Amino acid sequence: MALQFRDTLSGETRAFVPLSREQTTIYSCGPTIYGPAHIGNFRSFLFADLLVRWLRARGQVVRWVVNLTDIDDKIIRAAAAEGVEIRAMTDRWEAVFRADMAALRMSTPDVMPRATEHIPEQVALVEQLLANGHAYRADDGSVFFRIASWPAYGALARLDPEAMRVGERVESDEYSKDDVRDFVLWKAAKAGEPSWETAVGTGRPGWHLECSAMSMRHLGEQIDIHTGAIDLIFPHHEDEIAQSEAATGKTFVGTWMHCAHLQVSGDKMSKSLGNIARVSELLAAGADPRALRFALISAHYRTSLNYTPDSLAAAGAAISRLDAFQTALRARVAGGIAGSGDADASAQTIAASSWERFARSMDDDLAVPEALAALFDLVRDGNRALDAGCSGAAATAMLATLEQIDATLALLPAAAELPHGAAELLEARRAARAAKSWSDADRLRDELAALGVVVEDGRDGQRWRIGGVGE
Ligand SMILES: [Zn+2]
Image (cartoon, rainbow, N blue to C red; front, side):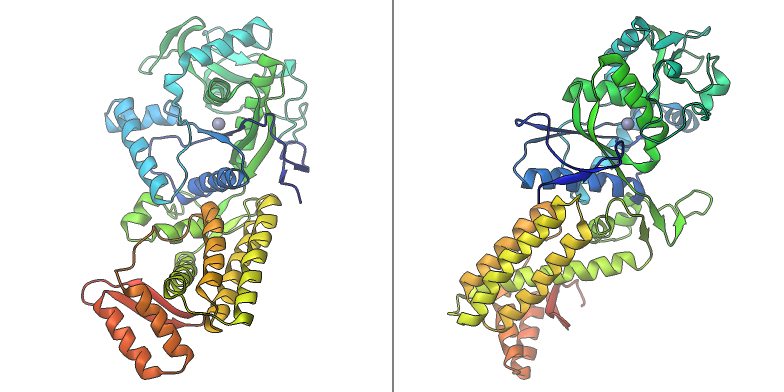
């Protein structure tokens, strides 16, 4: 099956063909950097990361832009409340965001542009829209997009343009505009707020404008894929389409992909419920970043993800199974036993079919649950082949598949986390258990413990972890 994605605008699942063979362009709406990102934000960013990783695994050259919103009403209010300069505050939260990103193994985007560093591009877009009649200046000097001039408005969110009462954000009270639906492109300067002196007046850009301007600056007037959380469909992405296409006369985005909500124990995350789970706080409290990544990517991106107190533990158990399998494979590769013909044949089949299933699932609009099922079938059947005495060469084939899959999922430990000699002891213990030599297995467990490796026996064979002091 060819690679296909569901496009929010058309509502169709379509074969994905980038505009250029040279490069696939992806823009993802990034964080507003005035506080710590929560797991709902990161669900959306990690979905985009999986998309980028998968396209790269499929051989595409991807250029990925994730913007940083560093000026808006919330940021201005937060900096004022703290009594700090806006730039000092946004620098601090950008650093936290980047640390969270690295911990959760999100690929580093090719560009992470800041809105305040792209004022000329935003001003140019406003000038263009004023010139071609899609924007107008209000009495106070603010500039609005004229929705009546853009009949396609509402197509992404499937709104009825006549019935809708949109744009009823803060500015609808604060600025005079011709039509309540119109949205602000440029906000005239107000006392106590940052502003820029520009060709379209002294003021600051509206939030929607930055994504169109930065996308065009770094990826061109037309891009292949635009991602974001579903709550950005309206008005943010609807406004992006209108202002971009009204300015350029070209289709702005080939495929719109939106990530569904994350709930916490069945509720929406909200300040009032006090259930906002922030990534930096979870990590500081000792959450395993790989388990958190697993928990956040494991549902299909278009289905709601329910995060519960058990999610991390379940994800941690899944990660342990992967770690144990990788260790066992490496040990068998190092051990170089002759192997049995039947076990080798089944290991080779498992290695090939697991990759095919994984790839087919990911090609089908990033069907991660099915892709994970293929991965854990590889673990289960691969462990059986190991128990049945497959050779080092057969283990090499399964290890290659495991690592090929992990280039997209990014769940396995960084290399060389086992102390020297431990892999061989783990392999010897697996063999002892298979031969029901329980006293040998116990002795090997003690030898591993002396190296700091704690071994536990589970459904899929032995698992290990690096033990702490006193364990
Ligand atoms: Zn955006």
